[in-house]
Length: 203
Image (tube, rainbow, N blue to C red; front, side, top):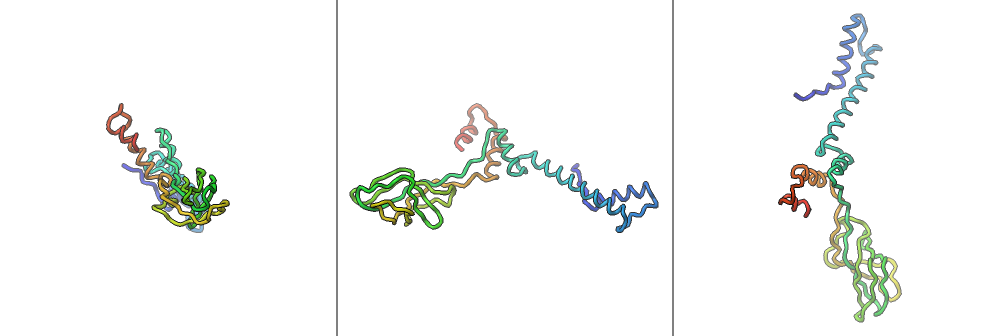
């Protein structure tokens, strides 16, 4: 049978009832000192009940708050997957032989992309250098080729550029995703390499 947490009014009324039983002549009306004291005590007791209910929710991973969910996960060797920045290429044009340095930034709207490798403009006046999104997450993903602009084009390189096939950007693992992995491990613990182990390793 579940425990029924009394309401604030019920706690206060019970205090006043017990007081009246001990002191039949006591004034427990709304304007009385006893009523004010009972109200104060009932408020504190109600807070304790609420805190106990919160503690109970943290005991179970499927009702725990974010930080306690992570604590449950850590006891099983799991940690939240971090956000990943999209990776792709920046295509630039310019004078053949001009250098394209590492750390060159290109803008696309509010997003920035930074070259991670150096390159050289080829005989056709183009170069494609590896780059990564400046901010992790899906916002950095770009399909195909989209026109951007270099923030500080080096000598021999035009400021117009193209952001090409930026892929692989993912958001930080959500609470629900972490919980799903944790429950999968709890419900199907390691079993010497059965089919569930292979699925978990792949995920």
